[in-house]
Image (cartoon, rainbow over all chains, first blue to last red; front, side, top):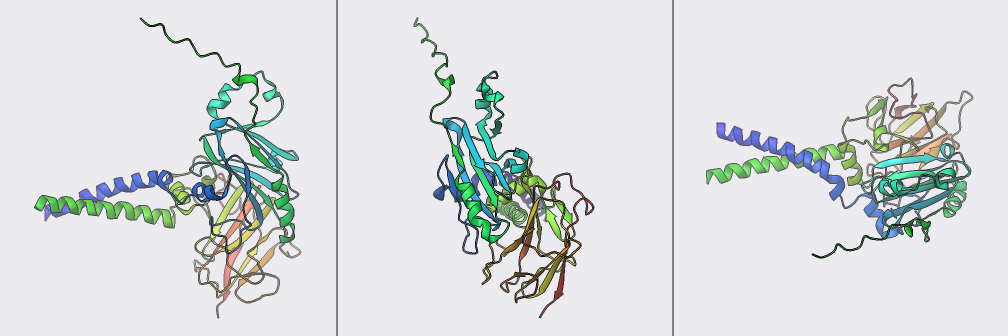
Length: 200
Length: 192
């Protein structure tokens, strides 16, 4: 009897460990997360407009039908990303998610304070490599650090009435998200690799 | 023989307890970091980098994208103010005022988070569409059959959820009470 009780207590303790491990591991092993769902239909480092939410739309749950939505799935391993989103009449926002859907940054048109939301997205390592005296800081471009190399940028424009949906979609169609082809001269200035060590 | 049996039993209990609690917490959600005002519940921290592990697991499991804190905050209700589950066959009235926000939207979802089909193609209201009274308060009637005023059709489904999203709002992680965020009331006024 005592042995059976001991077995069950051991099982419950082990179960608590299984619970903690599975909760912490779920974001990494989930295969139906938003990033995976969007991967087949979105382009990498480019803007893809999503279909407006309606009852037949089952790609992601709890989408707001009053918004036109566009997604930029990014991979920063090729260099920093430049994002430009024109501001629509009503309300525009840009949200950033890591590969595991942590919403690490979001900005709306009013906090951007301009007609166009312009951002540079880079990893922390790429940010540290930026020269401080460059005009990069002089031009008041907003620099966002991405905690992960890959992730999602979600751009949303509000259609306050259904009739304004076309206008909201047109605004997002004018947005761009790309890794500039020609890197500023910095990459060519990189010190030449040290000569191979002399053989003994 | 006996040792094998005991080991297997312990492992079985561990698997059932461990995976069972994980399934429960990621399906029903936990009380961690929730802000409850009346029938409405929000988790403002899910829109930030310090989201709790349970919410993270739920979000990735359901394939959702949470609204970021710089964007807004989302409140969900699955019951009325009297804790009665929202029933699509009944008449439900959402009335009052909303917290300060540049825009808000109120949307009706089924329990999987999908919109409910109806002939009007009306899935919710935005703050600009709504017809208000002289004092700025509004009243939305949620029912399966057509109603006067702000009518939100349910399609007659048994259970549904309402989501009130506030965009560009001071409501967020620091909000605690009804005084900071006056939420509209939800009342079931009649069932056939």
